[in-house]
Length: 276
Ligand SMILES: [Zn+2]
Image 1: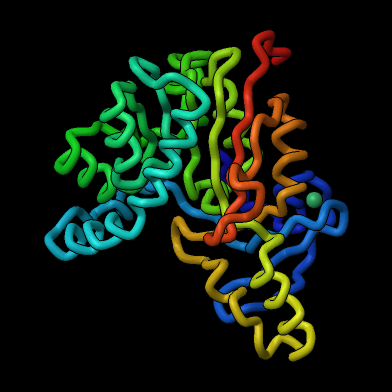
Image 2 (image 1 turned 60 degrees about the vertical axis):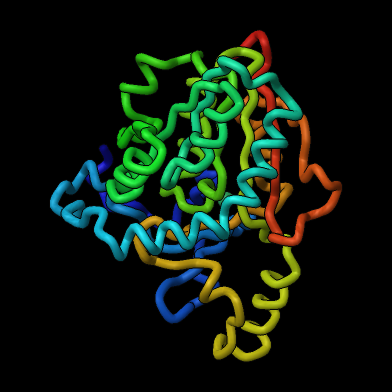
């Protein structure tokens, strides 16, 4: 693990020492890279595994009820995502890894199709919920851990990251590690908020016109709190990254347009003959 504090002048997407503060929000600052125009904030999560004392909170009735309420909201979208996966690959007895599995709902839905779900979730409360509600054992080790990189390299036919990319400390590295555990010909599915959305653009204009007094939605799109949004990609940045990492783009935004949730939805394939 890196113990050096991260230098936020260094772009988390292209690596150039070209990022500078552009939007100063109430609780955080958005850095913008002059080389590639990536937007990211100046906070990183401390992973619970690095600091076990932060993990004392466990699943109580309040947390349980809160999660149940969120689940009701999230379920229709995850069901649509399951349809998307099923549209691209047979699922029966297929090993699928869900990175950022949350409370395990997607793994549970996969199980209903006969697939074999695996999941990674760093937050203990969510893992406890998945275990109690769905009898799903999610792993705490993140994808860079030897547990995955050594024991499961080249294994999975399907890897999914639903609403996860924007939460990660280092999305490029995580995607690279995720691709390593995919088998040749395997499929990567992900969704993430889009910076091309109108409400993001309007928020930027508003910030500029008001000299920073009114950043509109920028305050809710990013958060310095643990496990919240740290970066938001444009469609082009994300598709270029996927190709740079050696995947072939299979599908982008199934409906042909950004859906009502303003998300990028993407399917990509690891070549049968992997170069790396
Ligand atoms: Zn950059």
